[in-house]
Length: 340
Image (cartoon, rainbow, N blue to C red; front, side, top):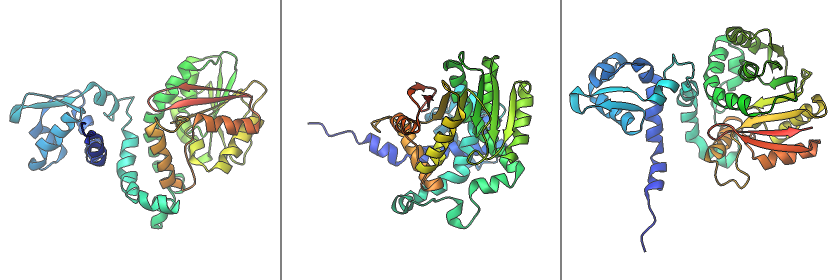
């Protein structure tokens, strides 16, 4: 009998090598520097300030990983972006997703080193552990940092919000409120495609000027409004649809249920609550990213966690919702919908 293949074990075990190569390339601006150019390795290395010893190995590793294209071999070889890295990893692209990768490199790469301690203690392993301010407290105290963070998150969110705006049946509804709306991106994407809807982005007061700027740039300031407040304590704007994009997973069960109850109370009969997350599959076997994201919530917040559609349905049934649906969006993400 043939022995089982050891490759998946070793590939996963060494996975941080590949991750760090990609994250470093994003940090250094490799894909932005190339843009629509094709450069020799020595020239690209000089522009990035790399030591000659590192150039061939670094760029050829990116080729082998599928993130750069190389024409030719040896010293005369030239490098260029692939279609995917040109679209998603050039900072000047409107579909840039590298902001979240920059955050992974700057913060989470080192905090995940302490996963064993998180598993043993159930406590966060981020800035708080090291005597610093919790991430969001620091961000909300500094408008420039907050805007940079919000911008970093938009690339990852845009793909899911576009898919939601395209797939969900908005015809029966007249209004939408996005809870924790950040830059207003979900409202913008929905309003673009459904002119009959009035959309409101609801978030904390420090976020308001950032959202105003993004909404003005979209040309939708007449149809996307902003409401400022704390979604745990302040009244929610009235709406037929309430959305939460990557919000519910930030909290423990008690706070999750509190938000679901608030949504139920705020919605009219026939209204819908939509949560957009990397929903874990009900049997917890398939959506690896969702499970890893839940471990990330452990590292970031301790008692926060991701969840399955079955979990969502159970919680929403307890609160009073009567009908449910799930739609796949993009990658590992889905929308879970509960109807009142």
